[in-house]
Amino acid sequence: MTTLIPVLGDQLSHHLASLRAADPAGSVVLLMEVAEETGYVRHHPHKIVLIFSAMRHFADELRARGFTVDYIRLDDPANGGSFTGEVGRAIERHGAESVRVVEAGEWRVQKMLESWSERFGLPVEILPDDRFICPLPDFFAWAARADKPVMEFFYRDQRRRTGLLMEPDGKPAGGQWNFDKDNRSGPPHEGDFPSRCPVEPDAVTREVIALVAERFGDHFGQVEGFGLPVTAADAEAAFDEFVATRLPLFGTYQDAMVVGEDLLFHAAMSTSMNCGLLDPLAACRKVEAAWRAGKAPLNAAEGFIRQIIGWREYMRGMYWLEMPRLAEANVLGATRSLPDFYWTGETDMRCMAESVRNTRDNAYAHHIQRLMVLGNFALLAGVAPQAISDWFLVVYADAYEWVEHPNVIGMSQWADGGRIATKPYAASGAYIARMSDYCQNCVYDVRKKIGPRACPYNALYWDFLARHEARLAGNHRLRNQYATWRRMGTEKQAAYREWAGRILDDLTPAKPGWARHEG
Ligand code: FAD
Ligand code: DLZ
Ligand code: SF4
Image 1 (cartoon, rainbow, N blue to C red):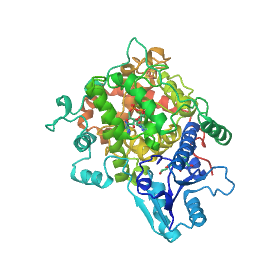
Image 2 (tube, helix red, strand yellow; image 1 turned 90 degrees about the horizontal axis):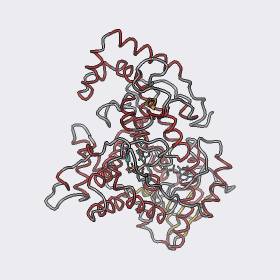
Image 3 (cartoon, rainbow, N blue to C red; image 1 turned 90 degrees about the vertical axis):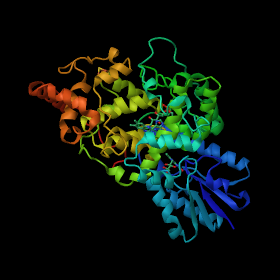
Image 4 (tube, rainbow, N blue to C red; image 1 turned 135 degrees about the vertical axis):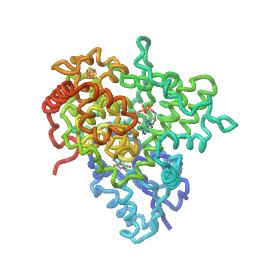
C-alpha cells in the first residue's frame, strides 16, 4: 500500500509531521513546481529562485535519507500546472491508496487540500503544521477568552509555554516581559555595520537562476544578487553568523534606518524560517543560549525571541482566525490606486526611494522600512488595502499570505478596524527623521509642513487624522494627536488639508499588471 506525501514549497523541513510519520518503503514524496504557484502573483524572481532551489536540494536530501521522491519540474512537458492536477496524476502513476499532507500555510491552498479526498475518492489525512509553536486550536481558545486578542498577552503565554527566558520561579528573565523601550534607538552615528556573507549559488541554484531569468525576467526585481540560504545547513550557518555578529546590537537598533545599509543588525532569516529551512523554536533556543553565555544582552535576546514566538506566531493565529474576511477588509474605505513609485522607485522621497531600492535589489526590507515608510505612506494616502497587500505579496522573498495579510491589511493599513493593531501605524516625517538618516539626504525638508519642499508625510499625516476623525478620535492612544489637531485652528487645518490634496492629486497611479497577470 503506497501513501503519497505531497510536500509544498514552504514545507521543506525534515521534521515535517507528514515525513516524521512516514515509512520510506511505503511512501512516495511528491514535490511540484507548478505554474499556479509561480503565477498567482508575479513574485520577485529571488523568491522563485529560493523556493525552486530549496525544493530541489530538499528532494536530493530526502533521496539520500531513503525516500522515493517524485519531483515535477516546471518545464516537465506533462506538468499540468496545479497542485491538484499534479497530485491526481501522481496518485495514478504510483497507484497510491492514501494521501498524507501537512495543512497549507495559505487559505487558498488549504481549500485545495480539503477538496482532494472527495475529488480523488481516497483517504486524505491533513496533519497540523506543528513547526509553529502554538497549535491553532490553542490560539483560537486563547483569542476566545481574551477581551481583545492583544499580542503582548499572547506572547507572555508563549514564554510560559516554551520556557524561553523564564526563571525557575516562573518570572520572566530580568524581571520584565518586554524590553521594547530599550529597542528604539535612532541610527548609530559612527561605527561599522556587520555585513552578511551571501551564500554562493551552487550548480543547482545556478540552473534555477537561468530558468527563472528566462521565464520570470519581466517581474519586479531581478535574479542577480541572489544569495539566500537554500538548504537547512546554509540556513543554520547564516543564523549562527547573525547570532555571533549582529544579535548583540539587534535590540538597540531594531527600529533604525540608514541610507545604503539594507540589513543593519537584523537577522534576514524570515525567508529560511517561512519555507522550513530554519526551525523557529531552535533558533530562539540558540539566542537564549547566547544570552545565558553572556554573548548578547537581554534586550537583544528578548527582542528577537518576541519577534518569533510573539509576533510571528500571533500573526499566523490571527490569519486563520480572521480569514477569509481579512483578505477583503477595508474599514477605512481606502480606494486609491498604488502610486507608481512603489514599482519604479522614482521619487524624491529619500526614505521611499531607499526602501524600494532595498526591496528591488534584495527582495527584502527590514521591519521599520516596511511599516513606517512603505506601509505608512500607503495608509496616509488612502491606498486600497488590497492594492498595497498585493505589492507586499509580490516583492518580498518571505511573503506568504499567512504572514503578509495580517501584517499589511491588519497591522499596517488598519483595514481590520484594530483587531491586530490598537492604533493605526500612521506617522509624520518626524518619526522617520528620528529613526533614520534619510531626511538629511532628502530633497524635502522634514521640518516644513506645507509648500513644494515640505516633507509629504507631514501634511498627509494630518489629513489622514482629519479624514478619519469620526472613527479614530475616540482612540485613547490618539488623544494627544487629536488635541494638537484641534488646537491648530481652522485656518491652519484647512491649509494642511489643501496641501495634502495637492500631494494626492499629483500621485501617478501604477500601470496595471505589475502585481498580477492581466486578464
Ligand atoms: P528581524 O527583524 O531580524 O526579526 C526576526 C524574525 O522575527 C523575522 O525573521 C521574522 O520571522 C520574525 N518577525 C518579526 N516581526 C514579525 C511580524 N510582524 N510578523 C511575523 N514575523 C515577524 N514577515 C514575513 O515573514 N513575511 C511577510 O510577508 C511580511 N510582511 C510584512 C509586511 C509589513 C507591512 C510589515 C510591517 C511587516 C511584515 N513582515 C513580514 C514582518 C517583518 O517585517 C519581517 O518578518 C522581517 O522584516 C524579516 O526580516 P528579518 O528576518 O531580518 O527580521
Ligand atoms: C511561492 C511558491 C512558488 C513561487 N512556487 C511554488 C511551486 O512551484 N511549488 C510549491 O510547492 N510551492 C511554491 N511556492 C510556495 C507555495 O506558494 C506555498 O507552499 C503555498 O502558498 C502554501 O500554502
Ligand atoms: Fe522621507 Fe520626508 Fe524624510 Fe524626505 S524628509 S526622507 S520624504 S520623511
